[in-house]
Amino acid sequence: MNILLASSELFPFSKTGGLADMVAALARALAHAGHEARVVTPLYRGIREKFPALRKVDWYFDLPLGLKSVQAELWELDAARGLKIYFVDHPGYFNRAGIYLENHFNYADNAERFVFFSKCVIHLARYLPWRPDVVHVHDWQTALVPALILQQKNEGWGSPPPTCLTIHNLAYQGVFPAEAFALTNLPADYFAPDGVGAEFFGLLNCLKAGIAYADFITTVSPRYAREITTEEFGCGLDGLLRRRQKQLVGILNGVDYGEWNTTKNPHLVQAYSVGRLAGKKVNKAELQKYFNLPADPATPLFGTISRLAEQKGMDIQLGALAEMLNSRLQFVLLGSGSPEYERGYLELARHFPGKVAVRFGYDETLAHRIEAGCDFFLMPSRFEPCGLNQMYSLRYGTIPIVRATGGLDDSVIDWTQNPRLATGIKFSEYTARSLAKAIRKALVLFSQTKLFDNCRRNAMRADFSWEKTVHNYLDAYQQCANPKKPQKLTV
Ligand code: ADP
Ligand code: GLC
Image (tube, rainbow, N blue to C red; front, side, top):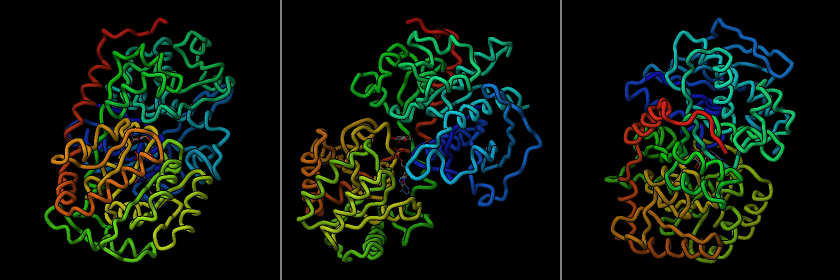
């Protein structure tokens, strides 16, 4: 198949979270499976300098954006295995210090930036000499594409490709004042408040438009696919999602083990594997030194790498750590996000010197080193569509402690439920006390070498490779093209 993927983030060119990893890995897996995948993404600041192999394409196009006409330029890069990447260049929109925000504030023109990007995606799908069989869009930033394609069909685009939308996080919907709708140049009935358009309580909701108009919808774990059809997790869109349930499927993300591995990884101090664990001890000692913590192999080391956001359970983590840090344990954090949580962790580090160390900012190498050097990885998310860090932790032999929600529940086998097959520790209740209890269990596990080694072996052998999962996306693409599905929904 010819598949055009569109994403506002793509590793290694741009990344704020798992979206970048997932789209890059899926594209690679599709190419590896013999399909022709191409990806379109914005040309953010610094990409050209970091990747000098990018070539300018001799193709400019002007696109209507409300009353304006805005010009885009295009760059391309041939990546491994025939994968081609297109970069949409508009210095005013994309040559900025951040991807979505700066100094904790979203850019005021994010609607304009990503409506423009969505229109560029469609322009490529329609006018490239290479014709996609499906256009696969990701999250709110490109979720207007299905509605925009439908409109172009109504205006004479003979047989446009079907569209697939992947929801990576329902909590981010791209909601903007109603005036932003004019940027789409769509007829007003796409905004009609009938429950199935772009309108959401009088506002423009990009993700909602995607859910309404995409031919098929996926999300990133089976459990999250069920959760988002409930009021508790539906973020106001559960009703629409229930209506589209027949075209909604949850596919657990895979891991790109070419990037996330412990045997051939330039970020790690020493390589190790399930059969040769000595290197993990060296990584632990080095990490302790890096964070100025006593390099004691017998002290269990817990770690977290995370956006510091409400979703990630930072409030209960701070509470649980405060309760548990009188025990013999160490904790390290790499995170960026809310200043309020940053203050919380700084406070914790001040209270427990020699036990807690934190780094704020974004650091790819340190992320790998934390995964490799820790004994346990904490991920107590309030909700988690999939979560990649717990899967990385498994491969790195770092036992994940997770809340049983979304993809965390789908990817970890709990020690108390099945001690023989266990890969981690799960807890259910969203409270600091429950998390503290899970940490206590981890301390017990750590003290029982045989059980701990067994759990670690299971974890390292768990296989979430994309090779195993990519056929699910191919099935989804087939579903997109299935003419039996309803074109337009009725309320
Ligand atoms: P989410 O996408 O919701 O943030 P995931 O677990 O799916 O959560 O993916 C997070 C990705 O971002 C992982 O690859 C993780 O290592 C990375 N990451 C998060 N915060 C940082 C950081 N401060 N520095 C480096 N990498 C980070
Ligand atoms: C989102 C979700 C995360 C998921 C990632 C990649 O950022 O929050 O759970 O792993 O997308 O799909």
